[in-house]
Length: 246
Image (cartoon, rainbow, N blue to C red; front, side):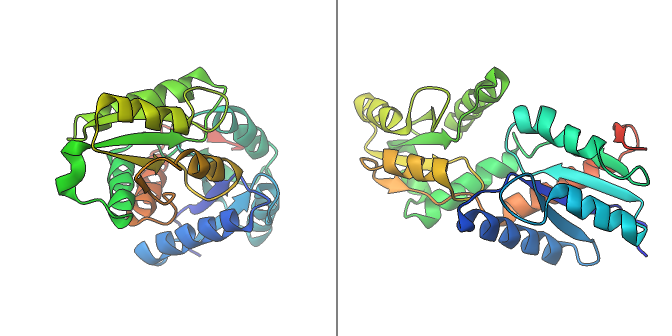
């Protein structure tokens, strides 16, 4: 048996089958990037296997060490409350370390630009293109502030302008941010969904992008996202992080 901790990717789950399919595609890419690392997937809701079910199966196999990685872009309610609660109920034989959420990270900005270029933009378009950084939205003010900070940072990489937008909980909405960028005089407007998988809120972002020139795909199994999962896994293996369930 390998002495490396098992990587448990914890996804939110969705009634939309595209969500789970995208999560599984991302996990396959992670496995391909690091052969020999055991990577499992668990869902908080709607999909199977559940996080609790995966943890019980690992314990039954005799696994001792697990790194639980929230498949989340910001530290909102799920990362602060839901996931720690599930991990506290794990079998006591498991040593579980909760990794940090994925964002913010320069790798995510690279993945966002990859998706915009795949949707038809080129690097030569940057200075004349305004971008809407469209996230799902959160009632957690920390999460909203992080999205706004990412938009400011991304603007300095050469775009005409970057505006944050939210599909729920906060304002502005995607369609309003598109109009703001038009009013600024950007020759083109692109919408970059800052979401990992398709679903109800990403579909709302897409509808809000109706008047944009370009709509990028969700981040999904972009290679930069897979690399980031492995970075967070490696960081969580450092002994100074809190161990849950030891």
